Image (cartoon, rainbow, N blue to C red; front, top):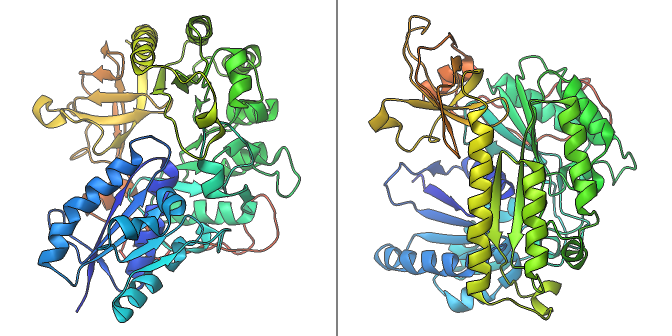
Amino acid sequence: MTRSYSIRTFGCQMNVHDSERLAGQLEDAGYVAAAEGDAADVVVLNTCAVRENADNKLYGNLGHLRARKNDNPGMQIAVGGCLAQKDRGDIVKRAPWVDVVFGTHNIGSLPTLLERARHNAEAEVEILEALETFPSTLPARRDSAYSGWVSISVGCNNTCTFCIVPSLRGKERDRRPGEILAEVEALVAEGVLEVTLLGQNVNSYGVEFGDRHAFGKLLRSCGSVEGLERVRFTSPHPAAFTDDVIDAMAETSNVCHQLHMPLQSGSDRILKAMRRSYRSERFLSILDKVRTAMPDAAITTDIIVGFPGETEEDFEQTLEVVRRARFSSAFTFQYSKRPGTPAAELEGQLPKEVVQERYERLVALQDEISWEENRKQVGKRVELLVATGEGRKDAETQRMSGRARDGRLVHFTPTGPEIDTAVRPGDIVETTVTYAAPHHLVADGDLLSHRRTRAGDNAEAGQRPKTDGVSLGLPSFGQPAEPVAATTATGCGL
């Protein structure tokens, strides 16, 4: 009998992409995705350990699943990801109804561990200390018909005192350029229009094979992939950000003028305590260079409020950098004490009420700036890649939503004589911005153009790309000598 699966993903884009790999493996092993609302035979929780409430989320979910497992003893529960790597066998001790625990270095073991747990009728816990196989060698069932993640590296060589990721993901490992481009081509062959290059510090790519300009070269190589319309990347590190990357962004037509550059703090004293190897003026100089080369660039950031020892003066310095940086938006976080990180042992842990008050001031300032920057977009013509699930109120407003090339979210009205039959997710439309809010734009006029795409055909048919693992030979840039074709089991390649 065919068994069904569902995967619940917590945390960052890395985890989202890992979940695509987990889904690909399970389908290769004969499992099928459970229909929405149906109880799955196998539930996989792909966890994150970055935030303080990550543990509560995991064990809360496991508590809800316990009743389902009591009603269906044949059901299996698997826990993977960063929290599994950290807590290991403690997960089974706290939740003995869990069947499988696997870590960040052995996501390729899931089908085998599930079968072993079923055969032996006992929990299987397998946590490796180093990467077993690069995730790119594993199959992937993609979440989107029009946009795909492509990992260019895993792990991190930095030692930020607030971050637990390096101890859970390991040292940086870089993929060979030919493998990356082969995966990009495989996705495009399936109709995908947009790829996002992923790395813990994406712009330090090349450190493993000694080419500090490798990331800029990779961006330029993506520009030669026929049919690839948009290239994005996340997240770069300011200390490793070089001018050749800015040149590649400005000169490669399909690389989007969007940059997510984590600031974390505007205080040089706090940046030093965080072990962030740049200072505020260096950060702002990068932004100046980006805007000189690409005046239309939208720049976003991450900021942590309330790091241990942060004074009011330190916080005011952060506010000043935010004023000068003019971010289009920011992901703002209250410092979260994570056991196992150096920052957790620092003196000067701040009271919750102090952190909350500063957080609210930062959010208010950034919202004001975001709104001012978005109002500058009113009246501009924008090209949108139509998305699904981006507009929570689309049904009641009779709108659809899409992302502009600079990453801004635009809610638009799908009306006008330019529409070819119907607008679908994955299609490309052009429209004019009529209204701005702090976190989105609205375009309520008739569409100026509408281009139906193969991605839109696949989205309409409910088809998602399935790609095989990609593994080639020596490092090289440009098209692989023998292009690797994508699997077409879903019909997406037809």
